[in-house]
Image (cartoon, rainbow, N blue to C red; front, side, top):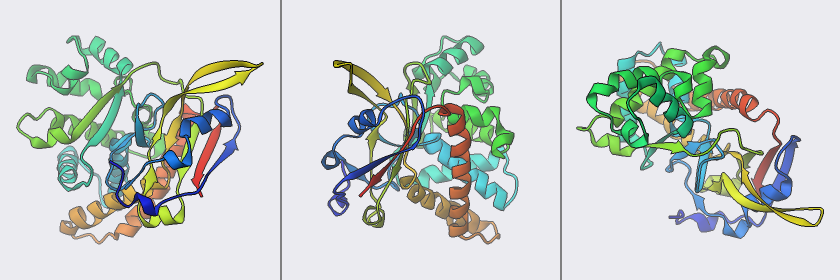
Length: 318
């Protein structure tokens, strides 16, 4: 349901700008994908789940590299840099604590059918998404060893972090630790927290995106903590030589302003809920600033690898 305060965030128009030319969707196709300003639905980005930055995601959504999983990993990375190296047991504890603390109903992570199929071939257990979500105890050890390998991850941001950890400046072990923590909770039949986890397997071939779209808010919407959910894919219509053509437009969407509000909650969780018991003074604003800085760096690296030749658009609410 749309946020009840959405009436206060009432932009009169949308400003769509081409920031970098490339081979892909036209501005008209992007306009059709976004829709009319009066049809936008606004939500509080601090209290919603974020899906992964992928054109195969269906439905209206908030999106960021890696989804909720990617944002929590970013927070772990920043917190580790401010304190000391985190081990598996500590990451497990922080993850479970955050699931109890968080505002949104779900904590989201994505994979895709290609990664699930690759995982199936590696572990040889007739795997599908339902079995991955609820495997036998006998198979869990083999699965967890395989899941920390890049080719068995369907989220291209997480795959890139595993393959190129040094490029991002992150420890590969930390990425692996959080993957293990996620599946430990997901597979724990005695824990109600497993019901908060959402693992989605995206359908279709990757790398079908035709543009990168960045969503920017306006001052009044930020004051009321509101941002619009958008579609990552939609049927659009173009004209070529007088002939009408249908296109399945898929784009990378990044809610660059909305995610800063979401990150503020993560920063407060680590600085006030976790660090409060550690005896090390960390201001949540400092952690938030570092999350913004490193988040932009992560976005730039992943974006340059998955969207290098695509046109980059920015949408601003006016």
